[in-house]
Length: 219
Image (cartoon, rainbow, N blue to C red):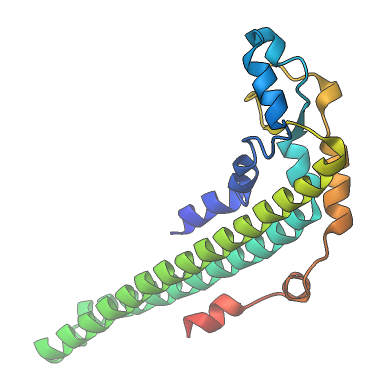
């Protein structure tokens, strides 16, 4: 479970940006569409306005990403700490049982079986706790993904009222084989997103404090 969380932490909110890789909006009018049908394929693309946004820059400079990345990082670290503590406690109990067994500390077979059953229950409780905390983490990540996606889409709708782009795409790695830098609007998009972004009191509080919520939920 810890390894699974590590992988998720390394890819915090990454899926959000890729959701925006499809065209966000098309401002072609019906008349333009009818006219395009009568032209050749090459002529159809002449009037299109296309732009792109750099994914890496968006993720590293958009404050929403940065804030929620911190929140998820703290939550993931708390989960790992909690599970590690529980695991050490379980191992300590199992070692004590083994030592008592080897020193003939159990007077009856029934006493030994009760001790073994107790260790088994403790192990099952730890597995259930790990699954629950992991599910909570996944749900939080999904909620953040949706909020970030909505934020970007809503901004671009406003942004495009004056820019009138037909397509706005995400450039991630080599997904765009050719990308003329003059169509890069990353700086303007990041600036606009950050200008309208207001951190919520809840997120600000989570970032400030060393959160121990996963430990309390484990009780």
